[in-house]
Image 1 (cartoon, one colour):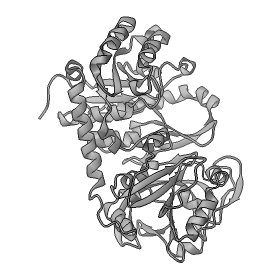
Image 2 (tube, rainbow, N blue to C red):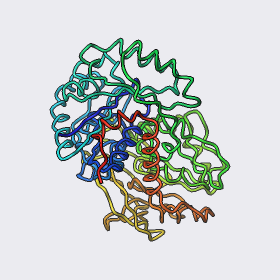
Image 3 (spheres, rainbow, N blue to C red):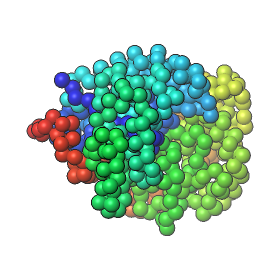
Image 4 (spheres, rainbow, N blue to C red):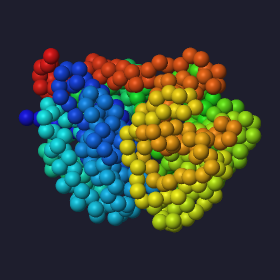
Length: 489
């Protein structure tokens, strides 16, 4: 019979994704057939699952931790925010529709069937399924029809471990407050808690553990220190970019503007991991650094909206100055579309029907169309003549004179465009920089001769490191119960 456990947080960004990934890898190292599951995710960081369709990048990473192919059933409901009030809804990998926040609350009960169907599929043949919640179960204003936290846990009868983030402060109040505010049926689902992101001497928190136990009756399953290896894993939420922004004395400065609806920003993790690269995420209100050798426009869930905001930030003028100074520019997906002469959305797929002028750095035009490309894609970088593996998730058709100089070939079909002088190019392929040969060739153009050899292996090693650290610090009795009490060869 498949064992199940669900990690829910006292709030967003408390580290649930990394803990689930680490426990999945630890279970795999112990010989278990383990699978991840997240009923509902809200993120513009999407992946193309191995069985086709979109899921959150976090569940793709967790599948990697399990050593199994990713599946749309690991994340049956994915919400991709397009505006302040509305999101695109992806159900079991396919676009289901769009809804504003209030409309989605009414829609959630209709999606429970798909969630439970996917959960049954994921459980089939697995020894263990580790489920990740979303946000906090204490958001009782969203409890009716809930499919992300306690609504799912009570319906599927999955025990819950609550995760509190001590690094942000108030962890005792967060845990005790959650206990106080939950209805009895939800409270009974919680079997214990984990304190996450602890820094310093853990003995100083002994009285805190006693206090939490006194107020809640919940046992502590362990105190997890701030995991350094987690920094080598892709981040799920754009709020993490604030922490990822750094200023180091790197040989090569690369700037990435933080668009409002930035998507798939883990595209840049392999560059950030390079010792000779200073990757700078430029916040709203800041200027693009004048000493950047390369500026990369990232993907976007709302190309026209982010293009208009880019102009409001003055980044269009910064890009023009960067270009005149001889700097290079790369656009990925939505960023590629922004580089052209215009972006036209006649059907209002991203909002109201609208056509706007692009940045004019490539001689191309993009027209949004309802057909969505979602595919894992073998490709080839034509300038460097190296093979690539990446993925496509985009709307729109891009044409124009600069497409006669494609950046890539995807499945033997030309993709992207390059300026006449070769200093600006764009492509629809995500995952470009995770290809070691391409990354090395690109950085060599800027004089960086020594690069990391295997980015994918560094992620695998980080997962191992997180797993082994969790084994050291979590309660052995909890792990014994979770893993079935014995290791498998």
